[in-house]
Image (tube, rainbow, N blue to C red; front, side, top):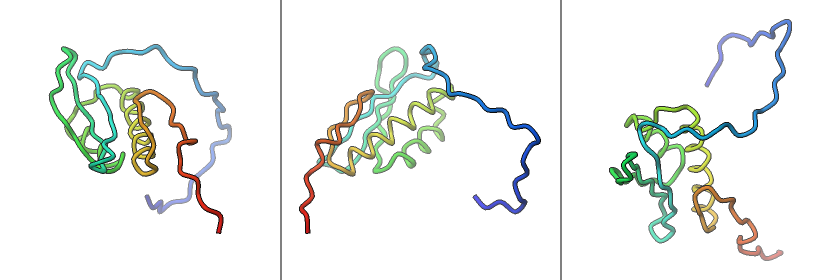
Amino acid sequence: MVRLNPIKRAEKIESLEADARLPWVQDEKGYFLIRVLHDEGVIEVGYCTNDDVIRKSIKGRDAEGLYHKIISLGLVSRTEHAAYLGKELCRAELALKNGLNYVQDKKLNFRQLPKRSKS
């Protein structure tokens, strides 16, 4: 994004601390199941309605393309759900690009990365 006008500084800037995790609230639109398909070189996102039925399968090679598609389809109604989805899709993209095992809601194990030879 290109800014044409200089950014101004308020006289007093409010300083805030990040919140701890907020209570989980189900998105009325549904939820997502995310997996990495290393053999196909893609991330697959299954969109499920709240009756636990997979309604759509969306595949892509990067987080940004996937979340743009999901948002354009109107599959998310809560901002915290969109933020969570972005975080998980970035994690899945890192796993895909680095050959790591991906399990939704779990940390990536970077110790799995292949050792690089010293040259």
